[in-house]
Image (cartoon, rainbow, N blue to C red):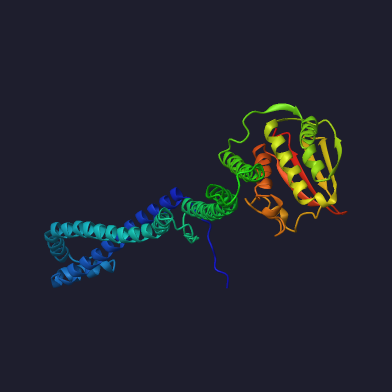
Length: 390
């Protein structure tokens, strides 16, 4: 049988309901207690009446008129008991009132603890977060108020976010160390060998070491770009630019790299105006071209397109005839240091930061980065800058 669940009430509403119930309960308990004691006093008094007064009282209860002497004896006896009886009734009201208040207070304490128990759990969980345990969660309860339920959901979402960030930070730290270790080891070993006289200090070795330094510089610059993106300081200066001219300029500057990879470039650059940070867009496009030269050089072909859509958004699309993207690329493309397969390793010159940098630049503009495989083979990467993002 499915358990019934009532909707969570706001704390103010629940407090008002509980207060009203406690007041009614207190008044009700006081009334019952005083009424019971009054009946007890009445029975005690009637049991203690003299015989003629008792007979007169009984006749009055039967709607009969007793004789005058019996009636006088009854009234005289009752008058002598009036003052102490009134005092006893007043004391019963006071005592019953105090007892009902005590009972309601105990019930109130119980209800308050029930309402505050999620807050105690939240406090304990917050202490866990403070100590660095990001796996702590607070179980939701349908008995909680709306505010407490919302607080529990927010806390669990925050804990999940911190847990994810902590895992990502740990992974990124390991990845940075892994990426820097090889070039630093080569530099250290080569320089030490030169100092020890094992290697001659010739131009070729120094040139190779310079390449390692340039690789380190690229890693540092990519990490700096990602850090600026996290701090929302990546896009600083927007201006109205024609994306087609920007892409054409990037292709011209990248021609030596494309020629070295033996890639034939085909273009369809239509005018596309938008407001963007041109150095950052240029950096993103160049990163995609470098990615194509690194992984799609075997295809020997690259096509660049720019479009202005009807909604005034802008599209930059780069297509190649390489191996394409692995399945599920959209889910992992934004992960730092990600590579699609084992062959995409340091041997090809990649750090795994390229697509993360492009993603950060596009998102900083309020756009989106899309990945797809072409039906005829190869990959297609699309930068979509909406009018709203511009």
